Length: 337
Ligand code: TYM
Image (cartoon, rainbow, N blue to C red; front, top):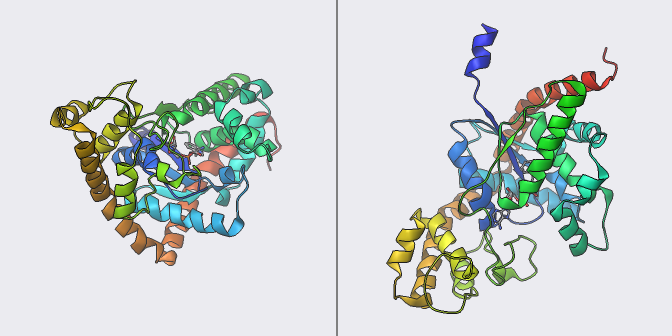
């Protein structure tokens, strides 16, 4: 009977977002649209990664607020709490506990090679703390605790996924088979939405230039103005190519908003010029984000519903996380009564 149940279990997904700012269209394109698509087929755990957030300085009241806002945004985008588990990372001490064990097999050299650590150390040179250095190990713990099969993320997390796989393999090798080896799941298009002002740079929630980023809470007018003012490339052709990062980024946004293929979008704008194209992208993106924003505004005003969802999520997550941690503690030689 148990074997039968085991064999019909769905494969597992875990992913998360750090609540260090308002979510952007980059989060949607790179990760959350895939979460929504995959949630029927997989057993899904979606996490608000507040432990990750404090690796850079946060205002505590803001962090509290953003954590609930992020949960509301997940649901507004289409995460269904009836079938997926939504939880707050810090509610499960197992994440920190497994991090400590993984720290004992993670090399200082390999953590030093993480490009995000290098970038963030430059960005926050006044506060290069140990947690920032350890961030990828915490991320590995997040993923491995749930025995995840697949981790849907944007391109910028790929290196962290490789580290996770290495740590899992190393642990399994030292202590015998314990962790599933997870696979990254990165979209072909939209894995890296670029800044509207500097299209060679990733769009980021913490960009000091607000017109570079489309936030999911932006009004129709804000969205349209930002897209109309987006930096484009020389020439006038609407073509997806490496030497046209600005236009390629807008084509990607058009694809996200309308589900049209790249070639279809290119064909629609032969000889039309940048002006017409930008106006159409602006309208399409505004229309796409409007219902998400409206649903979000309803949800954020109903705190109790969010708290109930996150409390249920915490309980669900704990069943799996605690089981993995017990197994790990036993394997490394901690006494258990
Ligand atoms: P975070 O919060 O920076 O981003 C959340 C997800 O959104 C993707 N993303 C983007 N995709 C395309 N274009 C962009 N401009 C863009 N900006 C962000 C990211 O790739 C990511 O998938 N450390 C993670 C959160 C995390 C996590 C985890 C993820 C913690 N533990 C375990 C997966 C599994 C982070 O800070 O993502």
